[in-house]
Amino acid sequence: MQQDHFDVSYTEETAGTRLSFHCWPSSRLEATRCVAPMGALYTPLKKLPPACAPPTALQYDPIRCSTATCHAVLNPYCQVDFRTKLWVCPFCLTRNHFPPHYAENISENNLPAELIPQFATCEYELPNVPPAGPPAFVFCIDTCAPVEELTELADSIQQILNLLPEDSLVGLITFGTNVQVHEIGFGGLPKAYVIRGNKEYGTAKVSQLLGCAPVAGGKGGGAPSPPAPPGQQQPNGMPLQQQTYESPGQQVLRRFLLPVSECSMTVESILDDLRKDPWPVPSDKRVARCTGCAMSVATSLLDLALPRSGARLMMFVGGPCTSGPGQIVNRLKTEDMRSHADISRNAEPLHKPACEFYASLAKRNHPAAGKKGSSTQAAANASATSAHVVDVFACSLDQVGMLEMAELVEATGGQMVLGDSFGQSVFKESLRRVFRTFEPDVPEDGGKMQMAFGATLEVLTSREFKVSGAIGPVTSLGKKGPNVSDLEVGKGGTNAWSLGGVDPETTVAIYFDISNPGVSVISLCMLVSIAYSLVSYSYITLLLYSILDVSTARGKTPLYPILDEIPARQWPNSSSCNYSVWTMV
Image 1 (tube, rainbow, N blue to C red):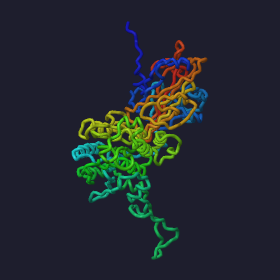
Image 2 (image 1 turned 60 degrees about the vertical axis):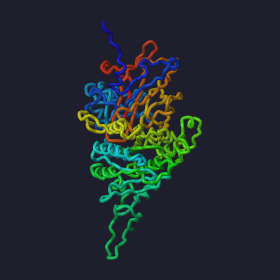
Image 3 (image 1 turned 45 degrees about the vertical axis):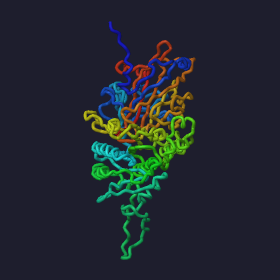
Image 4 (image 1 turned 180 degrees about the vertical axis):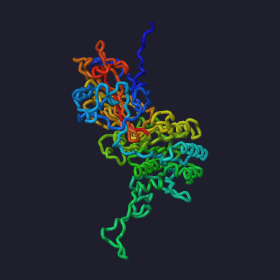
C-alpha cells in the first residue's frame, strides 16, 4: 500500500509561502535546540490557483480589528458568532462587531468572500485610494561608452519603447562630462539643457536650471508673477482676469516627461543621433563620467513631476564614475582602481563618500530621512514613501562602482545587471524581462506589466511568536512593536520593511523567534497566527491571507496546510492566517 507523503510545496503554490520547518518547537527551550532559525519564504505577488481567491477583486475596504495596536483583517480563521454578529481576532483575541451591512446579511449559509474557507487569498480594490496614474520611465544613458556600445544600447531602448503601454511617461537623460536633460516636448528641433557634472543638485536647483519656476499662463521658463490684487483694473477700466499658474511638476510633465505615444518618434531620433561625449580626454587621464550627478538630476526630475507615483530610473553605465559626487576613482591613470583588499583595510578614501552620496539620494525629500541611525537606515526609512525605483545596467570590462550604488538600488527595490557589453544577450534579455507582461488569459491582469511600486511589508504575530528579522531586497523602517524580538536575523529590530519596487519573483525570507516560555506548551486551543501585510502604491490593492494549520503532537507544533480538511466550525481552534495588502500594475 502506497503511503501518502506530505507535500512541502503546497503552501507555496496556494499562498506564496514556504516554511523552513513544518514542525515548530512548542517552547523557547526547544527552539534553542534547532540548528536553523524558524522562518518562511514569502513571495507577495505570486500568481495563485483560481481556487485560492475570489474570481474578481472585492470592491470595498477590508474589515479590520478595532484594536489600535493590531488592525488584523477579517479572514476565514476568525471565530464568528452569527447570533450576536461578532468576530474574534485570532491575533489579539479582541471581540469586534461586524459593520451594519455585514450584520444584516451574514449567516452560516451566507458568508462574505473573506470568510469562505476555500479562498486562501482575497484581492481588494480599495475605493478610497486615488488613481496612481501611469508609470514613468527615465532612461539615463552614459555617452562615454564606445560608439559601438551606444549603437547597441540605443537599439535595445528603441525596442523597449515599443513594449510600453501608450500612456506610460518617458524621459531621456544623457551624461558624460556634463548632464544633458532632453526636452522631448519641444517640437521642431532637438533641445537639451546642459548641467555641469561636478556637483550634486537638489530638487529646487534642478527646477531653476530647467526653467520650471511657477509662472502665470502655463508657459514656463520665466520668473514667477504674483496674482493680481482683488479689484485692480486695467488701464481701460476693465478688471484683470484671474490668471492660472503652472507648477514646476506640471511643467516637467509637459516638457520632459511625455506619454510614449506622443514622444516615441522624438526619443527614437535622439537615440539614433547619439554620439560619444565630445569633451577631449588627455592620454594620461580617464574619461570624465558624472554618474552620480546624473542620478541626482534624474531623481530630482522625478521628485518634481511624480512625487507619489510609480517611476523607474534606469541607469545605463559603461564605466566607473570619475567626476563629481559618487566618484570612485581619480581621473589620473597613474592611480589604480580600488581593490577588495583596499576596501577591507579602509584604504580607499573615495569609497565611503560615494556610499554616503548614494544613500542620500534614497532619503532626499522624505520626512523619514530625518530619523536617527546610519545612512543605510535613513535611506531605508525614506524609501517607504518613495515609489521611484532605481535600476543599474552596467556593461564594462572595468569596475563601475556597483558596490557603492548597491545601497540605493536595494533601498528602492531596483535591479542590478552586470555584463561585458551592451550587445550581449545577457543585457538585452535582462532589460526585456523588466518590461514583461502577464499572459493575456490571466484574469484582470492580462497584458499588464509585472511590476509594482512603493511596497512595504509588515508582519504581525500572536504572542507565542516574535519577528527576528528579514533577509532579501528589503530595508528596515525601524517600526517597533511588542512582537519584535531582541534576537536579530538579517535586518531585524523591526516588524516593517520597505520593498520599493516588486515583481512576481520578489521573495523575502522572514524569521521568527519562539517567545512561548518553557513552562507552557502551545496547545490545540491556543491560536498561533502569523500575518504579512504588504502595501504598494499603484493601481490595484490586494489582500492575501495564507492558511496554515497549527496543532500539537508530542510537544511539537507541526504547521501544514489543510485547505480542504478543516470543517467550518473548527477554523478558530486549529489554524492561523497570513495576510498581505499591496497594489500592483
